[in-house]
Image (cartoon, rainbow, N blue to C red; front, top):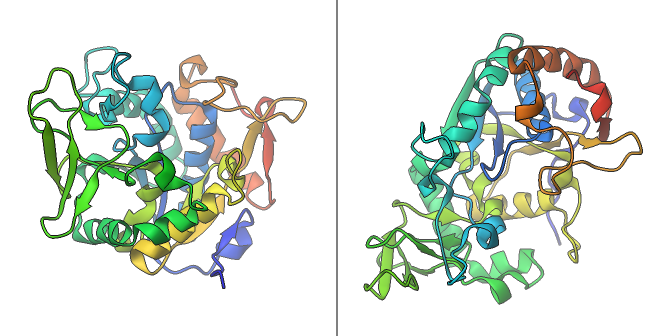
Length: 319
């Protein structure tokens, strides 16, 4: 029998959750979208209303969803993780830090109306509870695969990939886990590398499949994890919604999960969803005053929080 999880878009249903923090994250792939800002805004207002702290995570260890955008054209088996990729302006250590800096003014405006926002990078997070959660997933890979209807391992070796210490590339299909050595191991397929074989300690520079990211939540006493409305639906050809997969994976990894709040989707005037992945809707660079936008968005969300909203027209947002 499947376990029930607290998954809601009704703020009233999470009024009495226990914990210290609200968490929300974004992936640094491509330019950030107004939908990212809306999810962060909802998390900030919910944290303020519940009297909790807010953790904003840049999921810079993510790799699976964007393998084919960033691999080398002559070798689809190798890839770079986000925290190793150069930023476009050359002023930051990597593209992940570049994306966080892009929304600095927005976060300042949001903080002025809600709570202080702690920004973290998953690549810097090596808490023992997080590492143990990853071990639990890797040592129970058949149970993990079942959450995906048996389809995950047809595509990937595992949901974690190590980084070759010689050339810095990872295997695009994930690495095998050696529980005896606590390492991720894989063959190195980079044409510029002669090592042939690579191993990475689990607390080293690893990449994780994006649905594994919330295994950090229970160890940090997260009460509510906020996702955008796109997590409400299942991916194409699948029956289980994204948020339910996250809940089940977190439960597998940690034996517990936070509650999950699903914010609204951004839609056009006809109600068609707009998203970063489809290159539709407003991007961060198209917003003139991000600080004002963050401040005003907080006020709007407070008004919307009393409603169970699944869609918000982009025209309702201040530009």
